[in-house]
Image 1 (cartoon, rainbow over the protein chains, first blue to last red):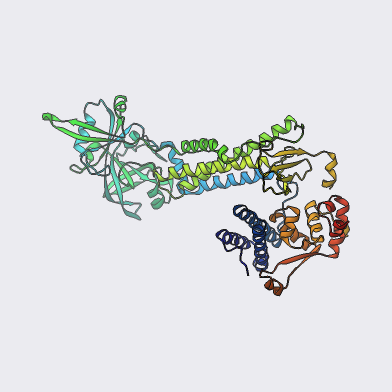
Image 2: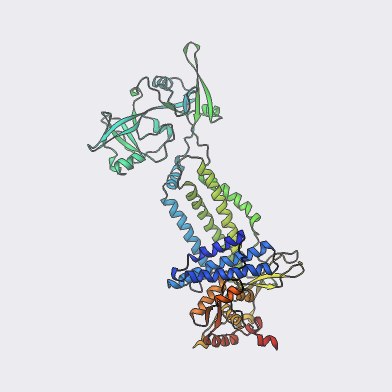
Length: 493
Length: 105
């Protein structure tokens, strides 16, 4: 048996048919697939015998295979006795807007449920520690190495300040924590200056004023609060014991809000004199206006002049977010996609027609309103979908999701906008239903002297659309033919 | 009554094509210019409504011609009656897809 489907694309086309057959109920699948594969064989042979060049023949055979999906869904719908869409809804603008609305709702729902996306969206309110720098010894290995002693911090905090108006210090160590008799565990607890959260401008959830009993305040990370306390807000105000010392829970730090070095389960806010002497920690400092004007690079060398002409090199690491926020990334990608749309599809709405007939201005307004409605649904859907794709499995402040979101937003906006344009060109200017029943007309041209095209018809009987196969200088774009009363017999109900 | 059944223009075109001897799905597509996603679902509906019936050709014929066996369709008596009614409703149908008799005139 000859096998015209033995090429690479032939294998792909057979795979398409086999893929479509999975939609067909199992009891009818084998016969359904047999018929389609047999017809595909003849289609490919006809394309080869008809003298069509390779690419065009393959395209026709592939289009044939794509129709298998429509057939498979029809067979399945009938087997499940699902009612087909009512005739007035099929291809109508309402159906289009409903589908887009459902897609938007799905993307929004996914964004609301995926933890990574929720965390990233909640971070947007405090993603930048504006004007805050981390100060470390210039000779320490990296930013995550504690290098400042408490005595040094106290000297800075008490000294004359020209470049910094506030300092905060913290040391991290594993501590045994017990609460309510039953809960006991070892947490990574940061002993921190009481002004740490104020300096970072981090709002605490369920924050309580310090009690008059003089116990140090403890701030829980959201992870620990959810894991150890089941996310119960009533734990705020309770007393816990940290390495034998009591502290009162004063609030919860939102997930992802902590961006300074070291992973921390809880922060115990203590007086500056209470830090363990001789153990290095980290210093965060808030820049004055003068200091901010000098902090022109993300990392700035700072020289400290001590007594007896001693010098020490320090490094100020800006904690300003270097990555753009997701909304700005999406807007930029959307702008690029809008500029790129004319490169992938024609932006003409196919207003050309064979006669001098012009639709009324109300119909033109409706048509443009429908187009803008589609765009207004497509872009938010692309916004949420790009968020879902980029941040579904990401950690806060990672760089990769930003690039992923940019790529996804650009692709989805480009796809959505070009679809909106091409869909608009296939909608009857009178009733906005999609034109259907494509039929090839004219003789196939081998010499460019013949003329060939596709005609589609509005099933409401308003218009007929002619799309030229080969755009020429005198007939470059599709044209509408407005049907008069003499066509009514075709559409008699 | 079958004669009273109202068909869409597409279904009537397919019935006319089958009546004119285009008995395979692909040949109907070529004749009518309709895409596969329209022709095959329409034929399944026509078959469910008993206007056409299908049968697999003999495997021995296909083997002799070194090709896969095809499923072919033919009009039922009910389909013929419906097609007659459709020709009255769509007068251009016979001119779009003329029968062998009409061609010979």
